[in-house]
Length: 315
Image 1: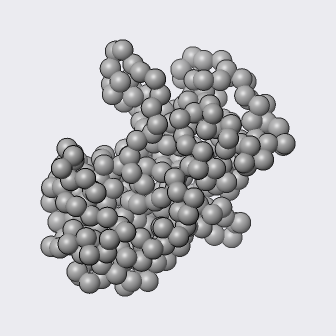
Image 2: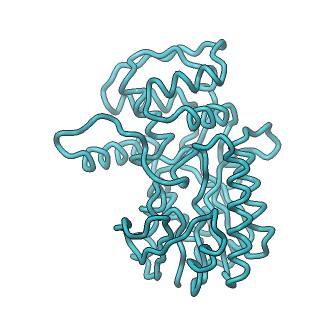
Image 3: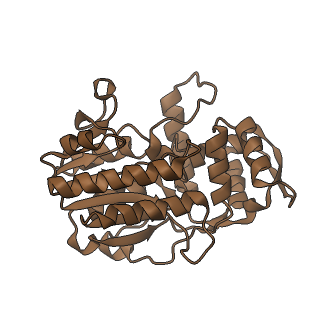
């Protein structure tokens, strides 16, 4: 199948494109800088803010992956809504059979953060255009250079003791990057998945504090976490941007979302794409191994997490 991947240079996209190629698909990698692209597939220019470029990029494709999120912008809700509307219209006009979207976990009955509400709105806008949409809703994706994972790792490695906000007690269900990619590849062309949303997660449901403690144990580092109720979301985000390489706007959006419990409520995806997801500890070990390989023997200071909008948010 010929398939378009938006955000092909991002955190998830650059792992998805080779997996799709290995599965025998003809991959078209959409990027704003095709001359600089060195990943799997054929690079093509496309910008979600330019609807004409989307139609051109999609030409000849049967399906597309939508891995776009503008979490580092103060007006990300408006930008994401406009982009989703444009993408959906372009998908309809060129006759795509399926759009696969990577969204965010969260209970619809909860008072969702602006970030998670935006993810839901993107789902709706993509579907409203008329092309069948398959949504995979994920919490934190554990993989080298993922923003939420980098925040966790850097907090553990930079601070042996933390006075933390109360959101560290919120439960989440992290998932390994390799497993997200496996689900994304698995639903492509699967008619039973058309027009449906699926929760995806690993086997462990953990509070954020427990996630950090497990990373510390794996790395052999001391860690004391002392939650206090006085740190507001604004103060929390400033603290995160000082201690980690996550920019202040992204940190604020992440902190706002960390008040929402994000766990799998419906595991029906396990029957459509059956395999055993990696444990949190194993996912951490893989992420740390991949980082060591990327940096080489000399290592380096922590850079800002890389990638396009697909790498933002809880990914």
